[in-house]
Amino acid sequence: IFKSKSPSCGFERVPVYLEPGSSSIRRGRGMFADALIKRFPLIPVEDEGRLNDPKIRENFIVRVFSYHRLKKLFVKGAKPGTLVKFHTEHKFLLLSHSRKNYQFLGKLVGEVKQKKWVEVRNAYSKTFMETLTFKSTPKKNADVLMHMMGFLKKLLSSEEKKDILETIDDFRNELIPLIVPLTLIRHYVKKHKIEYLQDQIYLNPHPKELALRNHV
Image (cartoon, rainbow, N blue to C red; front, side):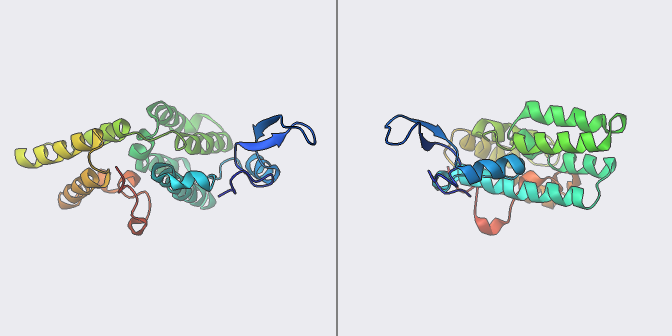
C-alpha cells in the first residue's frame, strides 16, 4: 500500500515538476514505488487514498489473497495437473473480472504439455494477476451467479429458485449487496454437496471476518 502523492512512495498521479521553481507539472509515480513495481510486477499494489472506496478496497484484498495462493502453488513445485486444478477452482472468480482473460488462461492450461513449463508458469502468473485488476461489475457478478444456478436448477424447488433469482436481480440492479445472493447459493451448495462449486474460490475469496462484499 503506497503513500498518496509521495515523491518516493506515490503509486500514481504524483506531481513531478518539470524544472526547479516551475509551476508546470506532469503526473508520475514515486521513485521507490516505480522501482518496486518494476522488480516485482505481480505483487498487488494500491494507493492508500483509493482504499477508501469499498469496491477498490475489496478488489485489492481479493488480489492479495489470490497472489498468496498463486505463490503457494508454485513454491510447492506445481505440475500441469495441479495448475489445472488451481485454474478450475478460480474459474468463477476469474470470470467475474474478465471472460476474455479467463478463456486465454484456459487455452494456456490446455496446451501446458506442448510448451515449456517455465513459459507456461510465467505467462499464467502474469495474466492471472492482470485479470484480477479488471473491475468486477454487478453485471459480471450476476452472470457468474446465474452460471452457478445452472448447477442447482434440478435440485431446488420452484420457490427456492425464484427466491435466488430475485436476489440476483436485485443485486444486478444494485439494490442489495453481493453477499445476499452469495449466501443463498452457498447454503444450497453445501446442503446438496455440489463438490465442483464447493471448491470454487469465488464463494470464499478471503476470510469472512473481513466482512467484504457487504456494500451495495
